[in-house]
Image 1 (tube, rainbow, N blue to C red):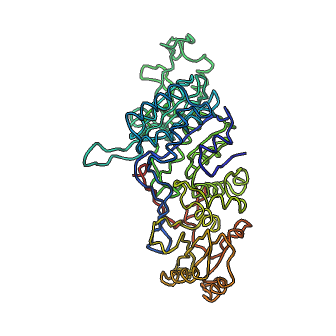
Image 2 (cartoon, helix red, strand yellow; image 1 turned 30 degrees about the vertical axis):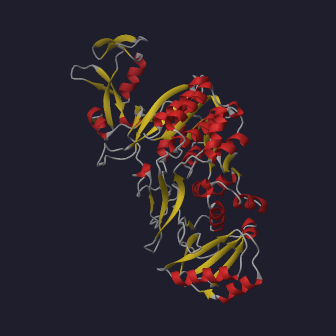
Image 3 (tube, rainbow, N blue to C red; image 1 turned 90 degrees about the horizontal axis):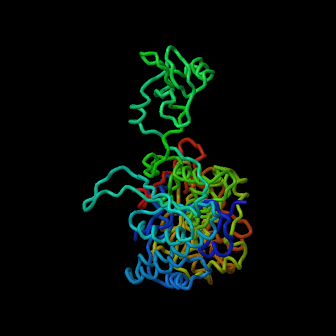
Length: 546
């Protein structure tokens, strides 16, 4: 069964993934680019754009970095090598305990665990940019090559077209470092499509039905394996094919004759796999606003990119791991290519989006085939989420509550301060042509009637349809009375609903979900949905989508 883990991938790798059980690992971690990435939604029927911060790609030297550094130096779990310990020890003296070094020690402990879980025939791909790729190359060398693995390639992916930069050459490429755990890794030759110039130059001939072909040698000249000598069409040569095969090809119209009557083989464009893939990938476009698979997640990679990697370095039934799976492109592709997969992400937004993506593309069966770890299933799990101290998972309780209750239709409010107590926004229809916001507030501690009055004030000020208070604790009687006093909202063609609603976390755990006439989902349907006139336009920001 496929597995999806919500939480810190380092903890999940150590607790749940056994040694040498993974065939392929691809990761696309944050790049230490020192910028915040935001998920931007165009809301149907309104000019507003709500931003939900998917993750923060900034690193500081903190308690987490100190723990990682200490674990490397004392070789926690025996996963480090002499080379990796020496490397990190040396880099500390060169770089100091700052942002870049915090990023590198965090990646080192995780890559070491990934190396542990890879089979000896396994492969590892790490997606990065030119800011940190040289350091990551040293780290991977110290963990893979030092243990009998191989560095195979630094793949350069041209992710955008050319653009100007006022101080340097334009940056329009990413790097993908490719390692194997040993010299006996899985490999299926990948191909890439010929570009138009190549087709125009070499596939310049056409049959009457329009099939393009190029002229190929039918003789065996220069072949080390020899051939078949006989006379054909007045020319005696050593041919590539037995005479019977040559006759069959002739009868099928697959032999072309030069002006001198020499037989040559027609090689059709539509029968070619393309060109063997090289280490420069310029044939796969980054996602743009018009691409059907776009979900609005920052740094989302195109499925074609993952299809090439997964097809080349794994077989059907193999297990594919992505420890930074974001919006789940790798797991969606692995699922489509009939691989087993393991996905991990530290944000609930990602987990919710992956589950929705799987459901949209494969139905409920695809979701039922996922073993879910780390998502709260009872109040004990909820309280554990509430009391997380890690800054990397700030507001995770609010995100879980809002996205679970709204079936991933709401937008998380990430604004610091001046948010008027609003943690998320959903949308409902007032009429066929008018959409109004639904203001959502989440409380993990004590609550009272004043919070209902405050939320009601925001609803009235913003012209919202209603307000929803999600609370960890049971509401008091005065709270319920205050909510009922706000009356109801009546949309056209739909039943009226309470303008102020109170939902407890226990109700959410028991299966309660938002029951409003919602507009089209905030997150775009996954690639297989083919709804004409889809109204939700989404833009992916961030370094990979410039």
